[in-house]
Amino acid sequence: MPESFTAILKFLVPLLVVLALSSCATTEPAAPREAAPAPERTVEEPVAAAEPAPAPEAVPAAPPSPAEARELIRRAAAHVSYGIAVRVDQDTYLGAVADVDGNGQLDIGLLLLGEDFGELADLRLLSDTTRLYHDDARTPELYLAVLSSDNGSFSERHRFYLGRRRVVSDVAVHPLRLDRASPAAFVVSVTTRDGSEQYWNTFSGDGIPTTLLVDNTGTTRTVLADIDSNQRLDFIRYQTVFEQGRGYDTLISWTRWSSAGFEAVETTNVVRNLRSFLDRAAESLRHGAWEQFVDRALLPATLAELAHAGLTPVQMIDRLLIPENGNRWSGLVARQRIEEVIFPEITRNPFRDIGIRTSFRTSLRVITAHGDTFFFLAEIGMQQNPFQPQQFFFEPIASQGE
Image (cartoon, rainbow, N blue to C red; front, side):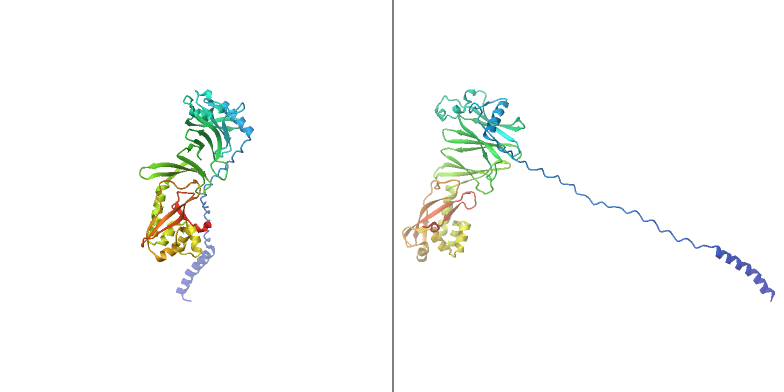
């Protein structure tokens, strides 16, 4: 073997041994450790604030028996610090008891006179109507004290001042709704030379004192009704007024009870509005505008009923205008043209009843283009609620069996 090759082997063998030993000593690198998972973050959904539970409705206090009411009035009179209670008899005083605002506590309405009128503090004397005609009869100051009763104790809620009145006849309780006993008002009835007055005293839904004067005299009348069908009491006041050059008109004022107290709603009139209604009706008839006439003259329910029966506008007018001396309306207009329609002049309120649906009968004169004159009867009505857009209407006479 050549020396050069031998020398190379001597160099490579040791080197190969070292490399082999190094390979055996080398370990595989450890597999990388997985990172620990990050802790989950809990996202809390916003929680709506709990709504407060509605306060339970107060249960109105049960009305007391007559004996219990007398005892409460007697004890309330003893609690009053000033003012003089009006004695009814040995046991009680002039007043009334009710839970007027339905809060579960009884209220006592107690009539009081001013401190200087002690000699009148007897109902037999205070209610004597002959005192109205005695010039020297004294006229006391009147108050209505309202006290609350709670577990035998009394506290005065409010004292209503009623002014000076000579004769008082009664203190009573009247509900302000048709479907329940409360809310209610303490009503003080007064007699005057002109008629009567009632002072309605109570509290609004927020506990604020509220008063309404209801008068019935020679020129005013007030009726109580539910004209808008909401189960709340309405006060409808009719007042006769004189208008120069026109005659007498009737003003109708509407006051209603609401949770805010006694509220003035609206005022309308009778004579002026009725004249306008009849003028428009005459204009429609004069121009042959039959459909316009029945739209203006009939209440919607009546118009729908007659239309459902198959009647034309002219045939509907046959039900509304009844001839006194000739042809029915349909026969007249088929032959002649209408020249003039004249209703009587209205100089005062022709409706006899108030507070209800009412009507009156009148005549109208019709003049044709040929100069012929015919007379017809008509029944004119006013709605129970005179504040509706259609205050007046024609009532079918044929439907009344005539």
